[in-house]
Length: 239
Image 1 (cartoon, rainbow, N blue to C red):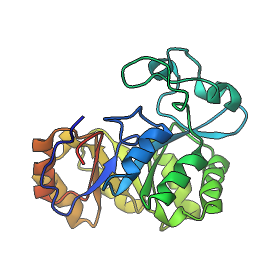
Image 2 (cartoon, one colour; image 1 turned 30 degrees about the horizontal axis):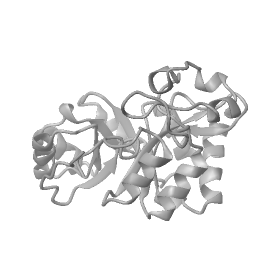
Image 3 (cartoon, rainbow, N blue to C red; image 1 turned 90 degrees about the horizontal axis):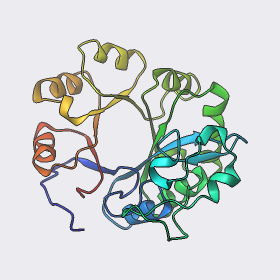
């Protein structure tokens, strides 16, 4: 698949679930594909398995990407690891398309010198957030990680011990009260791109808040966002 070019100006590009426009989302193949291109960052999602392992996977269940349906957080790591995912054509066959560990994802980001944009999926306990951080610290890569989450409490717990760690609150709509929430918790923003306009992006920047958006695969929309000065664009394919 050919990538679409647009004038990104100073915008930093993030590969959504790896380079999911050409490889199966949230797999090592997708992360390596992004690593071999000019992306600034590689985004993924982290879950905890039944037996306390951390894997990178988007959905709560495996059916959409594997046909076989298992609930990730109620399934052991070995069962999940043995599950073959479908390729982007919806068919199984490639033995390398499996659910990666958090450590594998971080190691690929480190090898290719990409920023890890890591979504804390669902609500984690404080202990679990620090376990995730410990895995990243063991690989000596915490300085190159941006945490994101739809769950504000995840980020509040992160802030309690890591007040300066880059972190972005995920949200799908813009409200005037958002700036106060972000400033109170020293957070940047990751918002659905259609909720942004030149006015609210200026208000965010005037408040000292960096702005990321998801998931923009439209080159015309991305060009507008870049013109408005957006800091990051998360995309499946644009870079």
